[in-house]
Image (cartoon, rainbow, N blue to C red):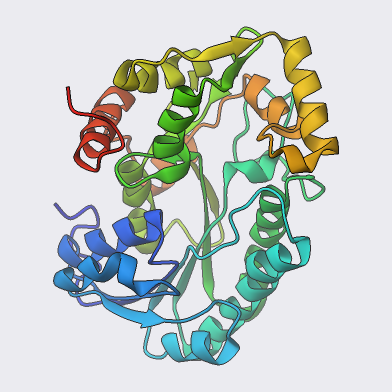
Length: 336
């Protein structure tokens, strides 16, 4: 099924980060369903060797290697930039180098190479914790976040649109929510692991909002961003309807038979404080991340629906069934 009505057939498309979860699924669908001529770049090509069966050309290129990235852009018409530093904490200079400096350089190289459209994958994390009930594309981004991933994504998000206008290249920004489904580590495999370990995942009443997006819904939106005449210069949230954390973890709890552990807010605040002050403990929670968990904000995809023609094709119940099937097939869950 072609989401783009075959508008991308035979188009030369580069995907950075094609060895990752989102990039590999996008590459497979662009090649197999849209008929595009896809080049996928990344550092660990062996993990996505299967993409070659779909006709994807794989090229080893480090985002920090200026000569290598320039070479991948020759003859490309559209670029999907998904390669990124993904950790919330760590080497801030390295995170900035990947998510901001290298992104700006890649955009300049793309413009110089004659690329027509550059789709940058940001994140709803760029909004930061907020007391707004609705975080749509008019909400400000938080470039002062302590979370280095969210902060550098926010900076790059703002910068690529400014730079695109300056360089005369079409730029589109996509802000996904929590991407889950077959192949997902952070919001699928890790969710099962956390529940099995008995770690707390519900803080306070658990009525804060999770903002999931099923992988193929996101890929639909990315593809539409490549073809829509309404997309250039715009940013788009891509999230499925929000659910509370009880509901989100409830799906995984039903799969693995481990109920989600809840702790009161006072205990969560102590845990977050300890995580920040005693990093050697390896605790996953910070005060900023806790603020995300308790927010009851909506992240609507209304703009993408109106301008791109985007629709949520796979509802969460169906998406979670696909996730469970994959988890069992890959041994992350035991078959019943």
